[in-house]
Image (cartoon, rainbow, N blue to C red):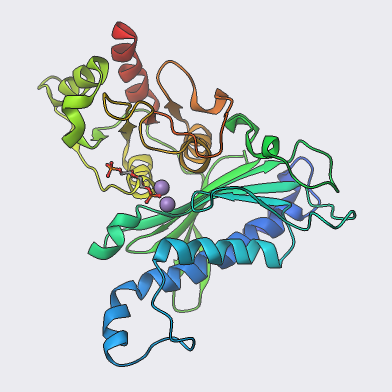
Length: 335
Ligand code: AHG
Ligand code: MN
Ligand code: MN
């Protein structure tokens, strides 16, 4: 008999009961993200055509300039979540402050807040290289029916109820976890349906890939420099292979499939590294741990950090467990 792949829609329904407080709300939320991912996928795919269409006089109805894709992705995700009235608040890398949904409505019973990096790796758009979207979901800590507060967003990553990413690559995939492992779905663009293509994704225990912007080497702390040298030494399964796309989502995705470590350390010029704790590191750390990987910021586990501000940056090291543990040994020697 022909094997039938499950669709994301079917998977969401089947797994709804797995979720501790299930009222269907989280399922609706993942559904809204699925929809927004398809819309953004469509925009990303025609990014290279914009100038050509423009030349042909095909401007949009308002005659406006084409928006930057990260702004557009931000709008699409916020719109999808706002219209369906399924969250009480949204925070985005592209917004200065968090957005309150339906704060005036006393009966507003939605329990979840969403945090997003609508377009990750945006500098890669102009050169036709994979980009992504990252999302993170928490239950609010303030009472239902009141406007959300900053503290609803500033929760440690271990409180996440779900997190995921979309990678707009050679195929578009949505990968997410609700705390019961990690599953990946591939979009069939012809019919606009995501299919379960990568059930129960796991980081290999160890790997041979290290991913870091080595151009910054001179600014790194000694522990990181020594680990990079270790990766390059000839011994056993080393030297490792260096792979760095510059889109966290894509670098992470590859390393989860093949085995590897991603590093964005602090340096003498960027005290806290570059990546954002709430929109990038926490969701990726949640997925990594759910996939038998590991994510640290130095001595500490990423998911234990108590955030102090929305756009906080932290150093980030994430990937196959044995590789992250090895790196930690090097870091511990100095700091
Ligand atoms: P964003 O496009 O959301 O600003 O994120 C870019 C991030 C991340 O995706 C990537 O790994 C990193 O920046 C690359 O930074 P460098 O160019 O400094 O290596
Ligand atoms: Mn990003
Ligand atoms: Mn971004």
